[in-house]
Image (cartoon, rainbow, N blue to C red; front, side, top):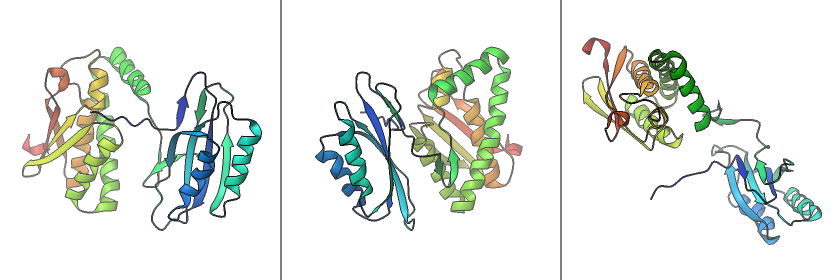
Length: 264
């Protein structure tokens, strides 16, 4: 059974009245439950919650929640905010309403970050428009453009991973995990297939899922570039990636073989 996580930065429920709550609290065990209890006591349904991934030594952490306040009077909502602010473990608390019926969004955080780097969320519809325009406008040339974008991106990701994790095999394991956790693929398996040669095997890759709507054949140009750039930076020598299987060519998975340039 597949599991889908709907990132709770925004929620739309027609016919309901929603609000969001943002909280900064002391990073200690049990603090979150003291914030949730006043919400439950008022019979308010918590629809979504997202928290910052605070480091173990961070003094505070932030949490954003979306709640269903249909039928909840304004004084009750303000009383909730007042009680949360009165918690001696809470540094700051805010309640936001967008003024749009049925719609709420996380308005507490200025930005999201991973490894202290800013993250900008690119939805499928945005990426669809980007890819569709490129292929409509530039035809097969779009594939080369996407490859070189991926090549540069792969290099920068590898630089970051090397600075954090040092060991190349650990870096590859982190890449596999992040590719899944960031939503690029349901599963990425990376295995060594020779000296300085690796196989990248993707299941349900985002790029091919989108491009397959209008293009057949081997279509994984952006990810092919990422794999080549990542291995080039990680190994300290130029690598090329060849797509040997693709779901848009009738295969079950998208598979790349990445080798040193001189070995191809």
